[in-house]
Image (cartoon, rainbow, N blue to C red; front, top):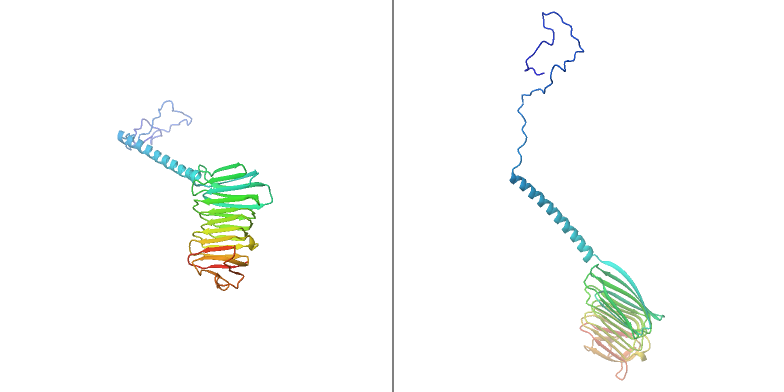
Length: 326
């Protein structure tokens, strides 16, 4: 009960009046109605509803915010998907086997390497390791017909590379080409006894233990390393190579022509079987032996012989070519 509410009757004995006994168990809830207590504070009014323009602006803001978040999520997912599909390299390996092959040509358009090894076998085994993206894989075509085996490989972009390990019969003729590479494209030939032709547009060429009565031709825009090579005709051309090291072994009787051409200043070393050769050095005086100009030194193991049927031709730019006996 509030102190402001008037008293409707005596609830407690007043002073000077006879004492009256009250029953504490008396329940007057039926006679006295219950009402909320009044308050002196100001009545609380409900907030005014936002205006129509504010409601519309709120809806536009919520829609714009949701749209922006959705676009950002989609862009992020698209970027991740683009990297995974178009730029993330995937590696795959394949093995192919062929019989009755006498001559092989492999041409790779792109980055990678070719490693050809001769062995005592009757079949050709090709093992490839491709690295490319999902949507732009390595394109390869292999044709085997009439004793010829043709392998054509194309890398669609700079993210792609294709490496080949090829085992062939020793007496099988091999031609390997790697061009249009943007990084590195190396070729190695080992243990062959037949004609070999190797070309790389950007990379090194290595030849080991090759003996043939046919021709060996090498073109490389990198270093050329040939060890224990015997061929009737050996032609090495390195337009922008910085190092050419050739070791010609075997009997001088098997050598007809050796030609080495360096397109820029390069370190050229040629080791040949001892004997007399007919030399052609361009420019003159840039081919040296044990005692200086090899065309003037007639006492060394490798010397000038104008009547010889074994020819050595060396074309250099500035640096000298060192020619020595095996």
